[in-house]
Amino acid sequence: MIWATLLLVLVSGYVAANFFSLTNKKGRLKYLGFTIASVVFTIMQLSVFLEYLMTDPNITAATEFLVEWGHITILAFVLSSLAIFIRESKPVFAQFPMIYTALPLLIIISYFLVQDTYALKTWLLVIYQGGAIVVALLMYSVYTYRRREYVFILVSIFLFLISYILFWSVTAIQDSHQWIWKLLIGGAMLLSIFGYKQTEYKIEAKTA
Image (cartoon, rainbow, N blue to C red; front, side, top):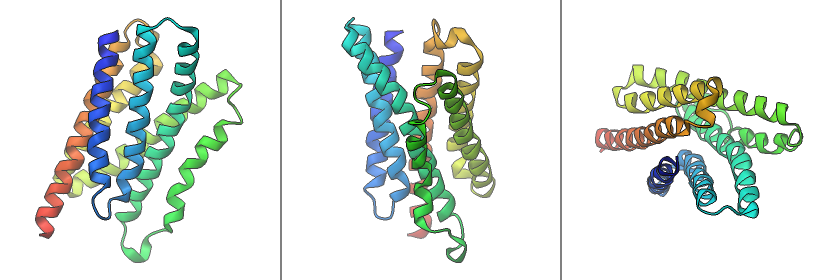
């Protein structure tokens, strides 16, 4: 189990570094949300890895807090980035105000209202995660139909979808077989960053 967590720490760190590189390019605000999300995910997995190494109640409590709020923070920033992608895919006259792309961040505030109710928290996570995957799947299905270079990103979303279905429908994968969803997530993250980098390279090559 610990090896899968360590692998996920390394993969997420690599992905975070590459998204940071994309964010630093001119006009790449759309990658900022993905960068923050991947950094938070790296911190989450690192805390889980440290929990395996040290049986300290304080570390366990800190890990539970980071994982719980990390999930919500990641979902909020991923949805915000997707909103920016959707905005930029429209003609200038049809684009909605940039401020609207920050609306998904309200998810973090809304979570305060249910943080003491386990059942509601779980359902919110299921809905938010499923919603993010469905939005991404629909969006990149259209993108891939128009431009073939988005195919790697679309495949990564399918991996996220498989991981999501297995995690929430098979109890063993949440407990004794966590390595399954961790490998799927790691593979999806690597495919996604590869897809985004390839897409940027090809777009730059066509506009050069």
